[in-house]
Image 1: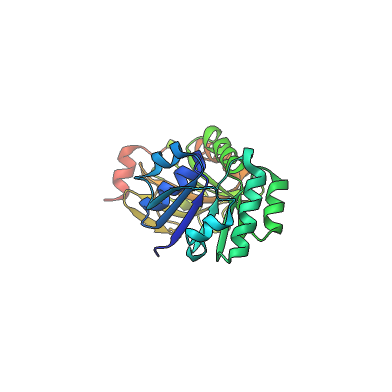
Image 2 (image 1 turned 90 degrees about the horizontal axis):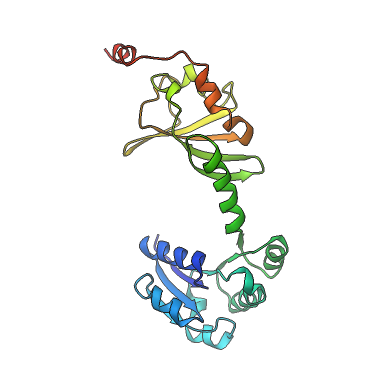
Amino acid sequence: MKKQVCVIGLGRFGATLSHELYQSGHDVLAIDIDEAKIQDQLDRATYAVRADATNEAILKELDVSEYDVCIVSLGSENIQSSILVSVILKSMGVPFIIARAANELHGATLERVGVDRVVYPESESARRTAHVGFDAGVIDYMPIVPDFGISKLRPPEGMLGHTLEETGLAGTGDRHGISVLAIRRGRTSFLHPAKDEEIKAGDVLIVAATNEHLGKISEIANHLEPISSDQRTQRHV
């Protein structure tokens, strides 16, 4: 559903966020005190305004309180301003406030002043990079709780032609501790795939697993009996 979103702070994180929201069809008001950043955002947001967001009168002039969501994306060099802006937005009655935190103390302070959701983009990016960079085949990773997350990955070569049951990845109680939530095949996605679903070249698996279990996916594939292209063809005859 289309929403009105105010993004305050147009550093790399804020500018990217503003543009993504705008591209997704939301009405976006982008605010920064730096004129150059506003010029860069003119065709990447519904409105781009140069303003000091620590000034409550200016935020009232811009009717920021009428927006559905306000995102405070000021960088780590502006922690004090980040907290002050969040306090002002809360006092103005903004329905939902998201704020970027530079560290745990900053995040805890934002929560205390009433921010609805605190995000840690640097930490989250580091976790994602660690998995995408070092776990073979992993395209993307989203942490859920410490040491457990949802990953998007390309199945190892050794799994191709095998069914989920044969690989040991079928059902919630699979023997490897990895649960396949979905398979994306081209433009089609299969949610909760059947145990006899065959893994094919080009498939992308969406799996839930501990970090330890996820790291063993290549090892699991290496222990499977190879299936030749002729055998794959015979299966479908």
